[in-house]
Image: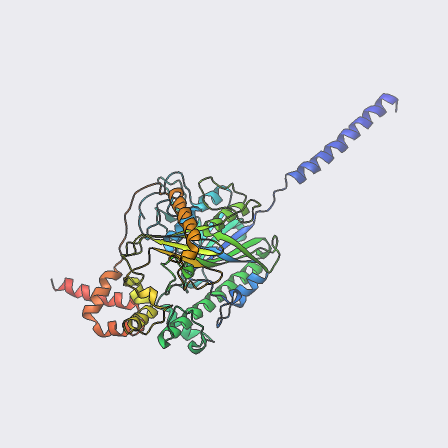
Length: 509
């Protein structure tokens, strides 16, 4: 072989080698990082009443394990203590007041302002399959409950298409990457509480429960608290089932599991109020692929931050309109959570709150409306209210228990959460804390302006429970007396009796 031919052959060989090397580099550079699946478990009406948060008398082994292998947040808060405004904020990642979705069960036929999108629409644009519910949890966990126009399934454009999810009840390998939102309903008040307790192999003993000091020690209240803890143990079993399913399907390693409450427990000072039991929620995240186990974080976290974090996990750019911040971003920095309470059923209310790690401030713009406003839904579902209302009239409540039943609310409330975690001592009128009060008062006004609603549409839905309650008092006085004694007589049962009575009336017309 002459020199020229040898030179040409060497050149071709070098080109071929370089070409192969470049292909390998390109192949490696083009390897798509597998996006994580994300499961959002949303327990209804639950405060930090889990064993891993220190709640006595309750056993939550699966949630304990989830926390031990993941991250447990101590200072996570919703932006509203009622389900539909709270869920509205989480679905958009934006405070519900700003999106004009802050009034419970209102504006259900009003499209979301065009500047906003549900975060599931953003996930679907990024290639995620969005799944609602699970076939093995109680009532399938398909609740959406937001205060703007939506449809369960279908596409979203916010104008003629309002679908939030792609499918229900099941996620498979073919759906990956998927996002699944699953509601754990048992902890929500309902006729199933007694049934869950009856079927429990180890129902909580009412005699052993530890009540907060703002609740009276009474047999009916102890039983009701024990039933609530029974429900928590029930949903803990559902959490365990979901983790086992992920293992069985070979999905556990690449799936982020998030557990939260949609608002606080449905009891005195809880759901519907801006006190700690209404706004503070459990928040646990499990993703061994990224997070070391057993970490406890004290950061102040808003529920809208969880939405933003889900988008960041999915590789989605956070929209500028979002008031939530991705928690695991190096720039995450939240000093306050701004809470709001507005319409709930037939009660037109307006209160605002600002919570930091050390302080809680509440401004009641309608102090003439008492905490105990005799709201129909709560009449049916809060035995403690009836019992303590009677004790209040008899002068038998302690000074820590009385404020909830006074005829008016204070215009302002200020609590030192470090020294007074139960918020028993309102410091708003204490001159020693004037500077703290003024700081939180001013900052709350700033948030009022920042979260000013984008629209003024207001089409509330008033529930039938208010009508049914008046009918109960008149037509079933003995049942009403049982309710006043602290017995939960069941809204669903009474609603059925009311409907039957109405049919007879209409038939006789």
